[in-house]
Image (cartoon, rainbow, N blue to C red; front, side, top):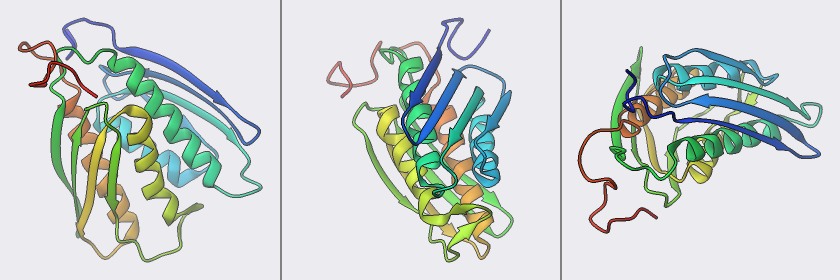
Length: 201
């Protein structure tokens, strides 16, 4: 029996523009079976880590205009994945809603706090010093998390608290986000909507 008590929380989303073509297949209550192909090795690594530690089953494929740069691919992958998460969460009945986690990676330590509130907001401080990691601009890694929060309807706070190595800082941030989301997406008995208002948004 999965975390959602056998309620199917799956989604398929696609996004096609003149800049990218993205396809996402998602199961919120998976076991961490992940396939990612974006053409950007470091982005693949981060999305894989995010999905695996959140215990999502995810297939994400992107064909983007990498001859221009990495921005459109990073952004559109996040927007499409976030839209799939939002669809899979549905009305969010019984969803725990809140999650928080710390994740270390060697000398780096990150904290993430999430609220599946349907009020999108993101505050991301990674403190990176390098211009790129692999073939991804460092500015676009924070942008990925902000875009993910936007379309998933989440309030997200991510802070890297310490770390010398930028690869470690980013990976710790994505893992902390995954662990916080893993908590927040759980379904349990209690109020149908986890809000004193009776609604989210």
